[in-house]
Length: 281
Image (spheres, rainbow, N blue to C red):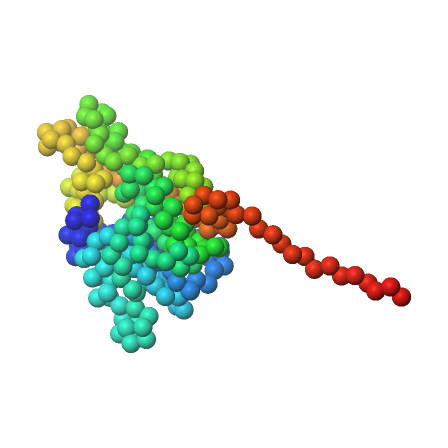
């Protein structure tokens, strides 16, 4: 999908309604925590809308823009303001995969990711890498798509007798288990449904193409089968519009003190307590 994301860099913003909305809702969750990161990273930053929110919230932090699509990073760089460039506060672009970040261990205070992690077949390697680059006490905050995404189109495929080729997404409980397995502490997961509406199925297809995710999200079917599925989908109109529901899973977790060394040996910590002894009279 890296190539598709790169090709979509110019058209992404016009179709990124869902990403902007979930980014705002994800940012609201930062009101509930008190952190002052020296460095923060937007993982899968696309054109940088989320990163700009984080810069406004944490102006003293060094912002890192991380994406596997170089064309997306070029958009982030182009949108940095002149004062940011002159003061050295423009986002630092990093062309990398979340599963292999070129960052030092313990170098981030905040790792943020909006609607990216669900594109991975297995999130655990990414969570382990994010745990590595976070400092102890650092925060991971993210959103991703859940299994009821595009439930209307999935049901339409079933009505038409067509095997739905849409991508399957992980349940939030499985995501929480993966966070614990990666070494995070106190994971908090919740979800909500966000429904967009379209005049025609072509509008839905066009948005996903402009985002660079059409094939990754919808999969592939012979056009004859898609016609059957879209005919069944059209029967699900509400007030003349086609609903497209997206299950949004939100999560955050903290980097805990490690319990083992990199080679698997247990870490034992000793505490020294001061003792006060009164002198004899």
